Length: 279
Image: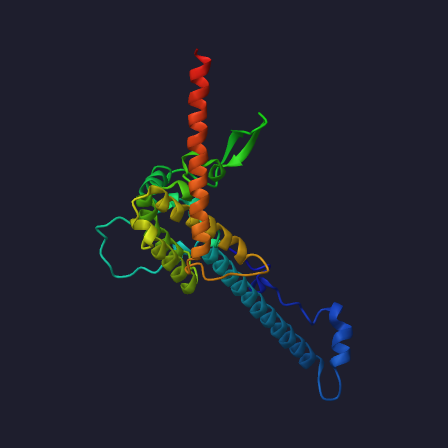
């Protein structure tokens, strides 16, 4: 907390009757002001200057305290949350990982997996870890270095959006929407994302028997949401992601089918190769 650089209350009034102030008294003394009156004038002026300095330092002190409080409130906004007159909720509060909260606070892209039941369970298990703590980690080249605990999150457990099941996709959407609102995303951005996910969940592909149709919706969601976050920071700017581009979706479905066909062909070729090698 800021402190006064010096306390004017402890200032000692000089002895203006002393010989050191003789020249000053002489300049003030005239036919209308005696030496005693000159001394009194100097004492009065000294007190006024001291009072002004005390007022200036106190105001400076208050300004620094207010700036410090605002900065702390900005960094630790949850510490200053209002306390409403509400009972303890029966349903537990959804608490995503600190990593995802920081990403959303910046308005960045974050994988939906963190908001699935598995992702939220993972966050609950790791909530006791101090992510500001530094730990020793082994880098890719074999060297060791001090890194933050937050950077060592288990990325291997994270499932990319396109590889989620449709059930997990539907689980994650309401959770991430709540988190976006908590992170103070603009209302129109939250509404757009909610409509985007809803439009995919009620799309005709969703009710088709072919599994690749649903896979196409998941791949479209993953690709287009990433592109939107990139576009927001580019010169081109944002656009309405909730308006499903059927041309792009059809192209995505074709690519998904081609990838699946290629995978099956490779598996078949491998089995044939193994068969002939065994002969």
